[in-house]
Length: 379
Image 1 (tube, helix red, strand yellow):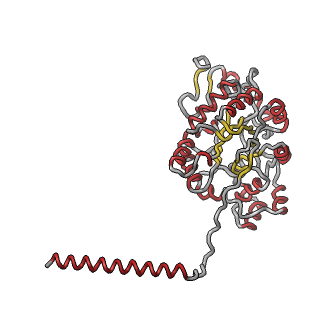
Image 2 (tube, helix red, strand yellow):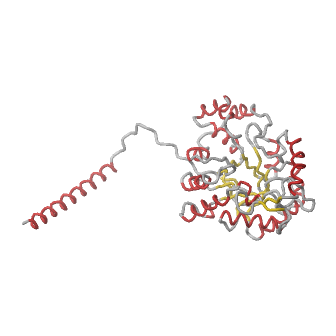
């Protein structure tokens, strides 16, 4: 009896489920053919794909990239993963001197392995540190970066600063090396397929002129500090007239006071965007690539959402009033900081005796092998 009742219940349940499924299917079909009811809330604006600029090497470079300068180890990997997998980024800006390329490389490897992005769609920039100017050191620097980033080639490799230091030292000039020699080594690595495009960072007009006099491959990019406080308009114009794409680092001038400036906040309110978006749009609207750093998902997304508005002439004119020529970069070997006129020679003198005792490998900062005694092997 219990078996019969159980069988009957099972049959009844199956019949009811089948009827319900058929009814639901008919309801969905009717709903799909009926006109949609008006929505009480507007749909969210969809972010368009990030546009690209064509380099003189013929490769495409996204106008917005994720900066990794001062992004701490333990956090930077998650930021890179989020940017690529969830925020539509395809461009990551790195450097050996940022001391985080290993973690960035882990995130890049995992993103490609998961299918979030294909290698050919990814654009990765890195930079050669200041004591790598001799050919063997250029090659060794690139190979270390490729190992750290878990890549077979770089999309763009830049000379980080227009200085020539002795290997393993800080601010000690190498009289037997040169930017021209370094550039020839980079050109050879392009020929080998280890780099697709080469460029420079922090070079001014005179330094670019000197480089291009002997270069076989023209620099594709000059990465410079650029924001409304330090627009460097003459340098931008010089580069663009010669087919050199400009990338702006610190494009938000470290935020803070500039975000709260009435000029910026008024324009942001006018366009219903964040102050950071105003500052970034100011650069990309002129064809300048931007690489803002953030480890906050909402800001990473907003920093690439720049295509739903445009600054008008009055906005650009208002932003031009913020120029004061002040750099926000603390590097003592930089040329844009007025204090460095005194600080640079002072630190060079201080570091001279240090260089006789200790050697440093900036590409291994924070890892084993970062420093060694000057008299040990491996000079």
